[in-house]
Image (cartoon, rainbow, N blue to C red; front, side, top):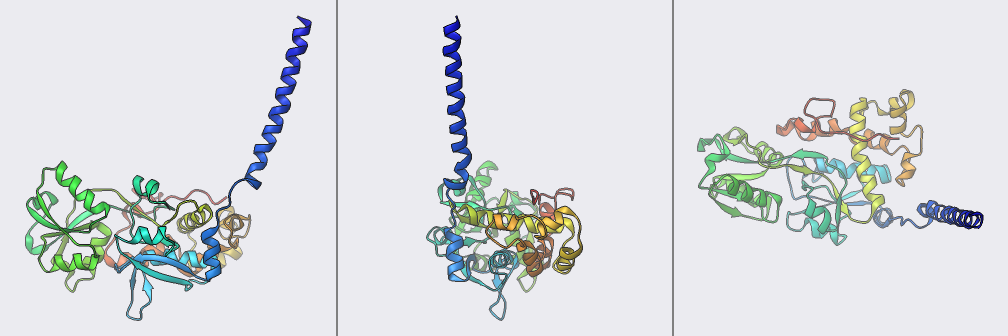
Length: 352
């Protein structure tokens, strides 16, 4: 029995020593062995500007004004990333992309990120070589018809012709909805959004379907918006947000936390107008971390610790971006209100 105990004790000591060696090896791994994927950040900094894939033209989201200056909700996200990297919202080159070529543009490196009304789905997240950084806009698919058609609800579209873009979740949702509700329709499939809208306006189709945000933008852009009605039915969930290439985690983290920073700023009441004053005087710990006055949160993302202070001063908080771009086209906050508002889904993890 004595020799057995001695032998077993030796085994235990050896196992403990082995575990300590292995444990120390694994503990050191993050600093030396974990890959630091910074290819996109390095390329952007070497180039001196961000290349952002946007819509070819959608009121409220991404559209050049009469001077050729791009404006919109998605455009402001591109500008925010440029501010975080260069402290200059103008160091962005905008590349208009269609529903058909947007993913190829990102995969090939033609653009650094997509900020283009793109729905986060499982198949896109796993098979297209891209990552969705965050949900910047909660949306859903709907239908728009001419008021003269006297259609009040989507099931009345049985037998209708419906304009839809190919290669989109919109096309699949339309087919799924029609099948589930035993509704017959004839699709008019046109690639470019502008051509889809033109076909609808010209009467080639009885209804036009896309995300409700897109319908609102299209309706607002018409000479007589009241001639068009967005039907009350919403037939899908469409979480929209900026997309980046898979595997470049540092850039993904930066884009993600810029969105969270915009939401946090609204929650804290920090705006483009008072951000500088808040940075100097606000003693709330979470505000001081957000604005780079304490902690090294920016350094963890390879940017200046005051990156969110710079972003907020340049583009405002989430609510300011929404109100500036989307309220004028008739969109309500709805699920895009802060989580502190009944029905609001915009929620940010803590800045700490």
